[in-house]
Length: 258
Image (tube, rainbow, N blue to C red; front, side, top):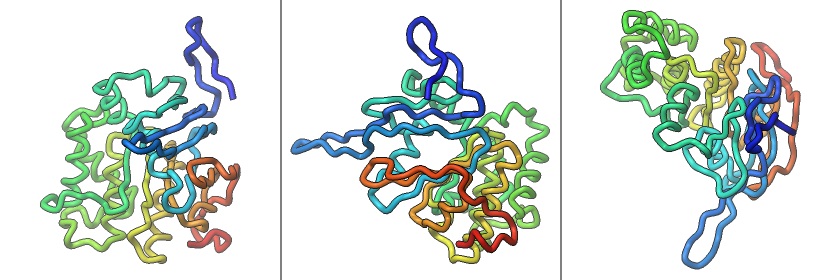
């Protein structure tokens, strides 16, 4: 796995059809008594427009890795390159701006503002993210479109307390895509839902790849991981196995069930 390098040895050109490169990534947390290895020498790539799963049991380092991929946390060694750009080399303010433009986040527990309607939650994301380059007069139309894409347009004027868990997560997906980021990340996106609702929500999340998004999701559920196009399995902070071309979930496909 090699990127083109400039004269300083830094990555200057991405690998074709690869959005994210992870090279020899490690994360160590130091305490007074010992060093705890959370991630240990991970190397892999995430293709453009893939449905990429990070699978593993609790404590395997999944969420820490997701934080590294989005620049929320920094590695102890190794690096993450996004379209050839090394995240670790960016200052915190520049990294925050980069994340606002390039990453949409879906949380396990939705994290919707309880006093705002579904539409207002998406509009707030547009406000905070600068509208994804759109003019303010276009924001309402964009927010409505995102709710429609997530199959909750008819719920636009309801508060989160008036929505089911699945409906809230669909609104959260609409919020994540509001500023049109190329990457959507989801940490256990169906972990707070019953199995039927989880299947429906995951179909919505997976469908975003058809709209040009790269979707990266964390899960401890093997069946959910098997619905990816590619995945890695983590064990104790290391890659135990990698699975390109996993079976993609499509509507009505009984071979990929949750």
